Image (cartoon, rainbow, N blue to C red; front, side, top):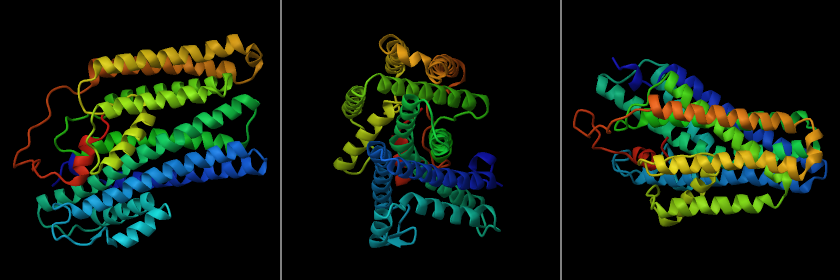
Length: 386
């Protein structure tokens, strides 16, 4: 019988459905918000809202298609050299991704295969065969979690900044706008939860990431620091629309930093540059370990800069635009920034001081089967680490 850590359980299968619903609803509310802006003749807001949706979709489709092609060439996942992957030929994959259905198709195949494994009588006769099937499901989920992380920071996070800026600037919002904000936040939260879970389960060579309190504290740190940062960016935009230039420069700085680390995530140079640009976007919102190395100094510098932005934004707005102090949202937003920063950084210190797993990664051996690394495992190993 498989232990719980090796099983893709029925609960995980059901949570995959929740992830799919959040993905579809988040995109749906953003498109609905764009249509509302367009109907109100706010063409700039409509264009930016759609731009973020398309950016998330386009990048996720590009990487999804590239990973399907990599899996097709992988000798472990495709030992027979078949010209299909997940039952689809290259031409079918191209059409599927052109219409933006790459991520949805991955959800479909994961749910379909997962249903056969966790809800039906297993056909595998040995424990090793069952472990292999469950591990295959975790690898499929890992690819999805990485694509979701891309989509969350390319679409949901910028969408939050934009809609919060519009809400603060007009001091009122619509039901659709509130729904857009809520589902964008939930999509980011879910992407972080799902990625952390899949990172732990899909790589047998990674250090164990404890569940329970350590995971809760880690997620509290991430969500609080990201939320406070997004609110601060919104206040800076409220101070001046030219703050977008500063955000672009910050993204370029983070992208350059990632490039100088010589990442090795993609199978082609062009895709690697795109990956580095996407990581640059992610690093403008939160810190991730890009190369899986000790980054205590870099993390300290990053969060000093993080706090500086969080303090500067509300102070500058209060000093340079005192008329904003009478608005109904400025005081609550300022309080949320302070509380989020304190709670997030407090959780960060608590997690890395007492709860973060220590020790070296396990060595590969024949028992664990760690020497045979699939393309999915290689991607997750070279991706962002907590």
